[in-house]
Image (cartoon, rainbow, N blue to C red):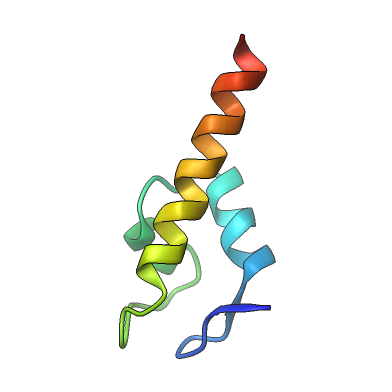
Length: 61
């Protein structure tokens, strides 16, 4: 499933960037050598980052 249609970024691409340390949507775009176009995907990326942080926090407990 695509998260960013403008740049062709799939959910797995975004997840890999987050696992590699991306903290903001800007970091995700940079890791794929692109930038936000219409920015409709930014909210979903932020949610994925937040979900990842929460999962990490739970695992650390």
